[in-house]
Amino acid sequence: MRLAKAKGQTEVANALKISVAALSKIENGQTDINLSRLAQIAKYFEVSISSIILKETTTSISQNVVEEIAGLKQQLSDKNAEVMKLQKKVIDLYEKLGM
Image (cartoon, rainbow, N blue to C red; front, side):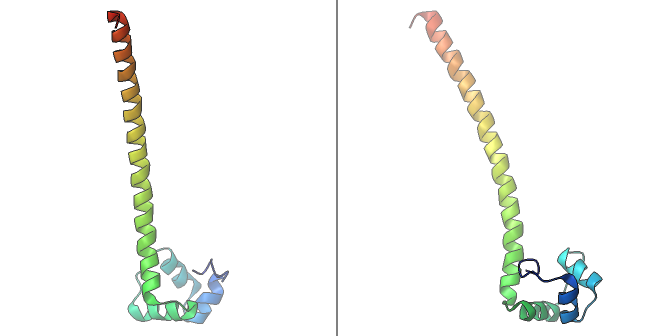
């Protein structure tokens, strides 16, 4: 949210009355925040607490889904290649048998 609103860490940290280092740890997930701090952040950015929580959840779910889809696409590609090889073998066998 900070980057999307073109806010600097110093500006946000000062508004929240915390150090830049503390804000950095919050942003990087190195420290847990309590509900009052979350409410303070939501108020500063003029969003709801739930929108902050849902965005984090959605982001992590989305990344997991993207990775899973990439893996499934690779499996599908591998299976397609295998099917193509088997089809070629069947065609070759039909040709050998004169069918």
